[in-house]
Image 1: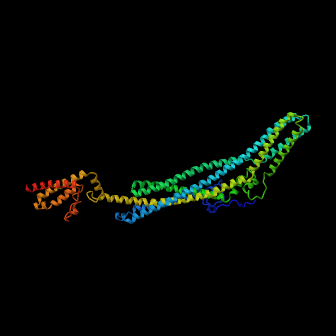
Image 2: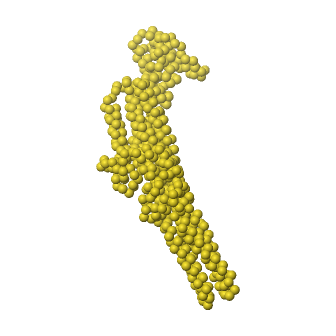
Image 3: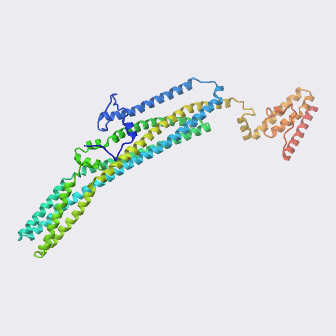
Length: 535
């Protein structure tokens, strides 16, 4: 039996996957033929998943070594705050983001392609099941009408034509034709088992595919969210957000490797089927349907044999034609003599007409073109769209693993850099005017800052007047005026005005209301210093 096909050619990627090494868990090579019920073949697919698990373990080990070296081999704080490290972290984050976005795009495409292929498979299975169900319904209905309806009409006519032996012989001949029709219908294959198997396979496949599609959709969204939040944590320099994203990054890395193993094993197993699908179907239907019938449907466009149903359908047609001729003769010659027989004869004629219509429908359903089209559509959906989508999902898993590896390497360095900056920030003197924290404190509580500066200055001037000559107090008047002026308007008199002392720099310009306040405070201070000097 020739197996050459011109209507289906397996794509090249199925041959590539089919040539992958098939090794069982005892590290022994096995046959790469599609045999899902064989234990060794199942172990060869599990072995591919174990390879992905080994890759995950090696990846986690490398990350652990890298993090250990990062924690143990600490650099000086000055080296940590250099710009090249910041640039390295920035470019690492950008690289991880770009790879993650590319991975998510590839994943969405692969998930859609796989879903389209599986949908085409289930649609073809349901369509083929509908065809087989129609064949079974027509055969069952025709046999029932021949056994029950025709038998009742012939029994009543036998009583009516009891006095005419020639008419009774005609009725007996019609009964033989009806038995012959039933015999031919019983010779057709029993499609009930095949119909149930196709329906159950389609239901299970659709159920599994829905949850597979939903799981990958959630995984893609999770990858995108983790990438965006990690970038946000780097931009905001939030250590708790980076730590949380690092934990989720490790989890997503594990899921990426797990999905890679599952997709690779599924793609290899499906490719083994796609390379030689006819061989597997012939072996599975050997005990249900004859090989000639299976060959007729699998190779419809490359026929070397005739229709296996042709003989049965021809006998069926001839038997119905003979019975219709006999009924027409009885209607023409027997009804004038036995008027009561007309009703039963018309009933038989109606039954024969409906049986002939069923014969035409049965001939169309049993034709190989309908089921062969469903078979080819299923193959194209699985082997082209389905396996191609699985390959894209494998690429997504690899890209996602790379992206999260880069992210997991960049986050600890960014975390340490943020910690060093915060430590340097805490070491700055709170009274330093260039310290942002001191400025924020002064701006949030201006009254407290002003009172503290003024009192501090007053006490210091009192001590200076008791220890130094009066000339120093007079010479310090411009400085005191400027320091008081600075204290009044939110400055720090101890440091902020120091760069202006000794340079003869004029005080800043103010609005009229501020200048009036300044002049009144200056006159009051001058009177106070004059009284102290006289005393």
